[in-house]
Image (cartoon, rainbow, N blue to C red; front, side):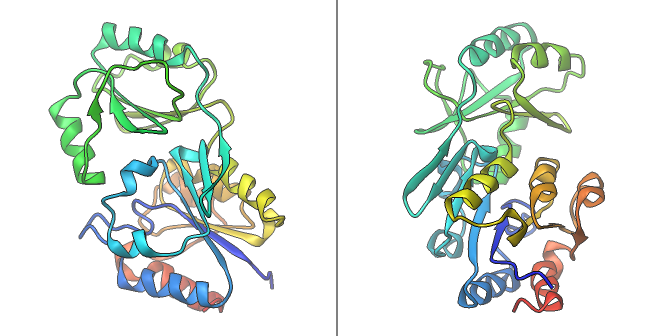
Length: 260
């Protein structure tokens, strides 16, 4: 039996339930028990740090050992910067040109927060607020380092334009949204950075997730666990599947494994 030492969690749909916009009490109890048992615990999210400020008090007050933001591009531990991998210069300028041609929504995040270049459609603002309980500030891009880009469009004919403008960036496409990080950067890259920082074997780390942008993270982990409410493609790539977030999935799985 593997003696796992650390665990990373995606936020939305994994720790944080959008059914009632809170972290289930069962998941809170699981985190507290793991911490008491000496595990290192971390977050791995596509949110930037600014987009976590409206999360419930339990999240904001819990002593996580690591935060992987922006889909792996920005990693922090105990106030120390571990990894910063911004998107290559020139990508935003090219995407702005695509935006002019297509009218797509263009949100970008950097060290100071999350912004939109140009006005964002009402539909996407509604979705964004429902997810994050905040909205990106409309601000023209000014050549600052960008860690994560979200593009939204109802058009189905812009894949090639986005790919050509992205200069080899890592792209995750789901529904009407494209998420971009620097080439080779995804959540798993952030987990690897923390494993190195902790001088820990990646095989000693567990990762939980529910979305397509969690696939690589679950693949590189010693144990990759997909949520029962997760995407089927993620479940197919995972080592194990736990229950639904709203059915105490994380707590039940951890008890079954004998971790708590």
